Image 1 (cartoon, each protein chain N blue to C red):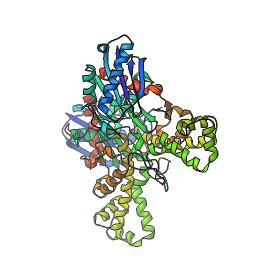
Image 2 (cartoon, chains in turn orange, purple):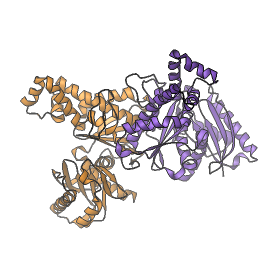
Image 3 (cartoon, rainbow over the protein chains, first blue to last red):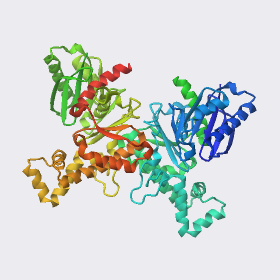
Image 4 (cartoon, each protein chain N blue to C red):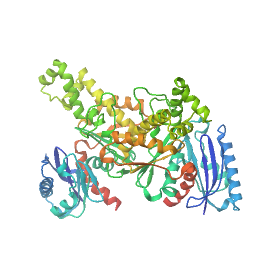
Amino acid sequence: MLIGSIDIGGTKTMVGIVSPDGQILSKLQFNTERSDPKAWITHSCGRLKECIHSLGYDLKELSGIGVSLPGIVNRERNILVRTVYPEWNNLRAVELVQRLLGIHKVVIDNDVNACAIGEMYFGHRDLYRNYLWVTVSTGIGGALVCEGRLIRGYNGSAGEVGHMKVEFDHPLPCPCGQYGCLEAHGSGTAIKHYIEEEIRNNRIFSDLFDSLGLSKDAAGCARLAKDGNGTAIEIYRKAAVYIGRGLGYAVNLLNPEVVIIGGGVGSSLDILKDGILGTIHKTVNPALLPVDVVRTRLGYDAAFLGAAALVIDQMKTE
Amino acid sequence: MLIGSIDIGGTKTMVGIVSPDGQILSKLQFNTERSDPKAWITHSCGRLKECIHSLGYDLKELSGIGVSLPGIVNRERNILVRTVYPEWNNLRAVELVQRLLGIHKVVIDNDVNACAIGEMYFGHRDLYRNYLWVTVSTGIGGALVCEGRLIRGYNGSAGEVGHMKVEFDHPLPCPCGQYGCLEAHGSGTAIKHYIEEEIRNNRIFSDLFDSLGLSKDAAGCARLAKDGNGTAIEIYRKAAVYIGRGLGYAVNLLNPEVVIIGGGVGSSLDILKDGILGTIHKTVNPALLPVDVVRTRLGYDAAFLGAAALVIDQMKTE
């Protein structure tokens, strides 16, 4: 059994072939061109064909294709409802892929939902049945699994921890149009903002990035923090406290056994974990503790593997 | 088919007989005596016998007995795990009722979970499949229904909105041992606290309660607010804003279609609703709106009817 996977993110796209136990047999990655979604899906399907042919197989040998998309997905109507890229709104993604590749079983979902389902089949597997999956990256997204089932909510937005309010006194603006959201205070974008704030008054901190050839962003700052730089550690600590507040609300409300963290910033969980856990312990009902915070086992490929897992998950429930 | 219901609350107990469509055929209510939980269960079972006999039936005609309890319930182990009354912790409630009444089908749950399940069978019924049920009373409790199923969480505490942090600058102490919880700022106890604060500097407000023979609590204050008293309205408005913050977190995270409010303070939803909805609209991701806030259709008997619904719910899933 072979599964096709298409993971379209806001900045990168991955397409490839995955085995039922989560082995990546073939994969291509390239930057997302967002201006024309239909042209982009067509292009991605073409690259998927290359992947299957490179393995010496044909399209008809695929059991199904999973597609993860960066926005709110309506699974009953099989469309991408809403994204931060207006031209992608209401995209009939399933129909399009079915027609382009001649394969009936095409399953779509939001990228973070795909990650959470991927964790169930390919990551921590049956270890956890009640968890919150959180991507900490440029933005922050989340998904809920309760008793082994993904909770979608009334219109597909359950689990979106990114827009919980975590700062009331000095709230920063969020891309969602509101203020004080977790995404505005705890994401990679927020870390970049804290670096820029610091650099304005601290020339030495700026020079440090330059002298080591580091980008002035979350990744560069993580490198400095891991090297023991106090300012960089403090910046990560600040983000961690906000992440802990947002997760604290979620733990209070959902009583998960674990929070699983993915995403680029999330890959630095080692320097975030103390701040996150410290805040959770201060804000969560003691009856719900301990609750662990762990890294995804899917790494960088979480949404790509998750897209493949969507097909397995649907076969299981059929 | 007849169902026995035992609803043991922190202050009152109700026992009685309910029909499968939620008609109360017989009911007794009395104050809860908390010092000896086994003795109290025994007493309640005795009163339940009176109820069934008063209808001219015998115990063996009961299809099952539902019991709602004021704490965290472990449904697999059939015990009341944890309450604010330590002597009730780890009570083997199911075994006790089975033995006392000789009926095998005994189902227990937390009182708010029972309310949420009761709403599904006897209240708003199939109208909603994704909702948050919130009791606003002396304290604040909650329960989640997603896609028509109650979400329990890892150790039975999912949905407990009462301990979400809603005040960081001037947090009040909460019975849970933390500060700034929704329960400390938006419950009946909080409203009583605001009344006492006001009365310290406002003799006229105090005299108003006395002259009308009103108790200086949430119920008395609701009466003044409904009569148009500005101070009383402001007190309810303050509580409503906090309730709106707590519900806002829950809506952001769970994407329900509606929040259903019960409890004594919740019965004054007419004077709370504007403040709650206004705050929700300011704190919730616009993609999740509109979300309505409505009163339970079960009224004062929510947990009592909910206990009976536990039996129906379990029969349905067997």
